[in-house]
Amino acid sequence: MFLVLLLLSLFRLAAQPDGPAVLSQQARQAMSAGHFDEAAQIYRKLIVQLPNVGGLRMNLGLALFQAGKHRAAAAELETALKLDPTLAPATMMLGLCHAKLGEPLAALPLLEKARKADPSNATVLLELADANYAIGRFGPAIELFRELTSLQPANSTAWRGLGLSLTDHSQSLFARLPAESAEALTLLARARLAADEPKAAFTFLRQALTKNPHFGPAHASLAELYTKTDHSDWAAAETAKAAPASGVFAEIENASKEALQAFARLSALGPSAELHETEAEAARARGNHAGAIAAWRKALALKPGNPNLERGLARSLLQSRNYDEAIPLLTKYQLYSELGEALVESGKPAEAVPHLLKTRTPAAQAALGRAYLAIDQPAKAIAPLRAALATDTDGGLHFQLARALQRTGAVAQAREMDRISQQIRQKKAERQEAAGAVVITPP
Image (cartoon, one colour):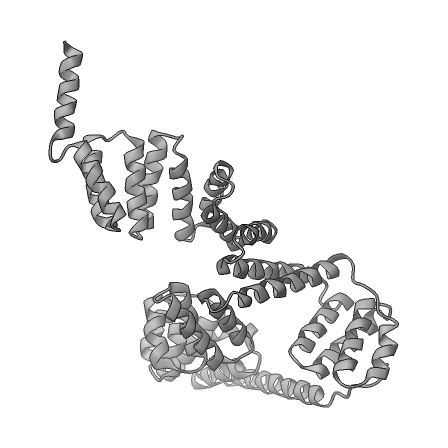
């Protein structure tokens, strides 16, 4: 009799307007209609009635995730897994939450577990690849992106991810080479040759062959340079000395070639936000800020409001000195160093100071020193300018520090900084003159 009464009471509860059955149906309808905030509210009502049901917590987490509330979603999904550790979808969604929150280390074990449960899930593969890439695990990222491009050959995100992973992998390998080795110098020469700077490439190749006269890849690159500069007879002599690459050099070369192939596949898919983002980054690396801005805008037309794209646009606008457009975006994403720089350059140094005090990067320190000088506080300018001196490539920071020291009465120190500033400028001018005077000579 007791069991019958219990069942009857549960039936009545389910049948009530705010009973579990009715609320579940309403929640499902809200989810289907894309009303995720409404669905979350309904699931919360259900959880009040059934607090220990892991599936309901998981559904609430899903609704919050779809509503873009990833932190709140993660909390509910963690609770769901505590109530029921067998909820595989909750594991996957929790991993996705951490990925969206920019927490790759937290996402990795969850996504790896989700992948074992569903090896062909493209969403899990992509987020797992991205998480590995974010923490510098380029090898696993490359394999995952390769797998994803095989699974979805038309996935532009996957091809971009593969290209970036291969590029960064090759750069990490390059960083291990001794700076003055024949291998490193030859790779620098190839980069200059690809950028259509044959004289700079020739200088690096001569240095490489001085280090190792028998380094085959350097001879092969010199043959290519001679061919490009219409010296086919010289090229033939170098081709005879060429030899295939091996070891780390070959690994770097192969990764670079595969990266170019991945970007070519991305381009072949046609216009996409991923393609335009890649074009923007390439233009920015070449110093073509106008081209970068145009590409960022094309990407944003396909993905309006995308944070990564807007941050990229903001930085390119800053580099092109378009401060009026850059400042609102830099403010929106709290890019304090760049925002401070933009404010200093646009004649608002006092407004820049509070932002620049929030970060300690060399660029921020340099801008902070300039801001203090502009608002007639030279004593405060000295420390940040000193902190940024290691990044001075044209003598400008040493000159600014000399001004600050001069204005605070430290005349001897000011003279020394001014001397160093002139020395840096002179050496830069000599390097430029020497580069312009390079003559491509026969072997």
